Length: 490
Image (cartoon, helix red, strand yellow):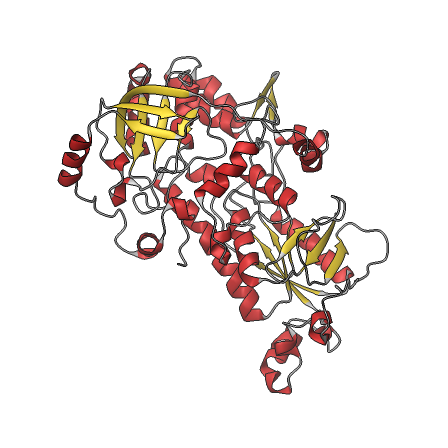
């Protein structure tokens, strides 16, 4: 594995030496540290000086850590560093904070401690000092369909905050982050953008698919088998077989779900930042412009046949990137149906478990799951999997102010703003209202008069918050709308 640590004037950027040259229109005043994590050749540190870099400070690889390692007044700092094993010579080396999202209770993260050991070895071989530290993580797959999912999105900001805190307090000169599960990736990248220090991300990698008696399974198979069970398509014994064989070992969920999507984007783009968190103002229209130009590239799960391991076999992200340079397509669709409204995903799951056929031809509305209403904007993978597993994917649309997992598929629309908790139109829809969803025109309309909508708005009162203390209450009070990235530091 070969990667470059780059420190541009505006923000930290990841580049990979095997993926071609940097874009010429990106002005960079930088130095690069090139370190191999699997390198048989002798390790080395290379300083690449930009012509624009004229000061001595621009060449100082330990310019942050020197704040505590060099002044005689920082004897306490130096005593602690000697106490953890550093020599006087080590104090002159750059210090790299290695932030791992390791914990045992998730296949996406269970192996990251071992990976962080390999990263630290690579840092040391390159002539630097590596210090590992952990941050928190949430398993979206485990918490999905429960109120535990309220903590998923806010974990992104906690990850960013904790990495920023340790890196800043310890005066580390660079950062290598090792994420595994969905919110890990944006959390680590947000921290890198805030810090503006040399940084790279080392993805924990994807899981292999499960195989049993000629069938191939993955995590979405485990979610969808419940819909198959309640519709009578499979027995409970068959359901258990799917569950037991869906996750054969370590690695992030195997399809083009959230983790692999984020990791691919970060590899392709250098750094796929939630820009608002680092002071760059992007609008929803900016994302739509990109979406309009991105072609259908591969028949990947959740909607398709293949998993990320298959992408690896044909050349991984670089092969896809090459194809992206040559093609561009977009298609759309439209659906109209009567609304079937649920206050939260749990009531929807209870209803489809009792009578799946009731949902046919309906536009399912799950509300009260937004950033404040959830709180935490839970992912609706359990409801979408139940719909698909019950064979209703072509007969049901789903609208929500919650989020979707990368594993969700079907005719689904999420992130609806303003959310129901804030008095958005989704909170005023009633059972039986006719809803038109036009993907091509990017419109969602409820077929009632303006007078009726106003009457409902006047009757509406905000629901009580679902958290009255603790971290989720603090999240409710600080979180921004989904259209602004659900950030908590503005």
